[in-house]
Length: 276
Ligand code: 2HA
Ligand code: ZN
Image (cartoon, rainbow, N blue to C red; front, side):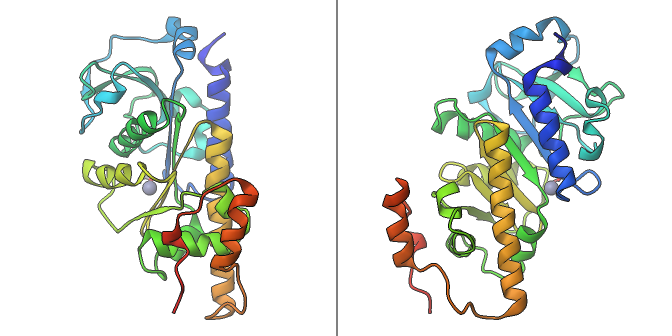
């Protein structure tokens, strides 16, 4: 079975297409990466080419030594992924020091892995460690309403988590750890990756002010569903704020405390502060 027929490839392409259709990937915006399972690497081994030169990642991820990732290409459009995966995606291998990568498949018309490779790999390294290898997907999208919120709310984990939770009862169930926020920073480098990956120690969602968000998860469904849930909540928040400066009623800290045991989740008290 060819690389293009593999289940992980089909899931990856579907997620890229869904994200584009949702309006979160204008032009070359956003990027996606998937840490392949050993058996998936073995299944496509005959199509991987190891002749390309090693290239610097721009950061160190020793926890990912020897891993293989399917990633979107830098400057490539999510819109085009489903039409020509081999031109817009790459499978890369990480070297034994965790400082270099090599393109083993894809980008057939040239190119490099996503410009956010340092952030993706640093997030993967944290998530692989804290989930004992369960998490495999890192997704960066330019979700419209989440970006809009970063012009209005204070850029704190507490403010964003609480407002997003209040907008839909399912939200604290879907992301009980809350969300982290990175202030505006230059994208594409190691520094923003360091700040984002620190947040990934605690959260599955990191919001980049005036830019977008990163989501992490074990598979494509859960990671895409997380981004979708956060963005829908942000859309409700923007709609409410567009109607009125103050909510007339909402889900209260007491309501959240009642919800938590009913759903078998723990909601950190730092998000259940009294307002005003
Ligand atoms: O253009 O989204 O953050 C790709 C990006 C950079
Ligand atoms: Zn971006």
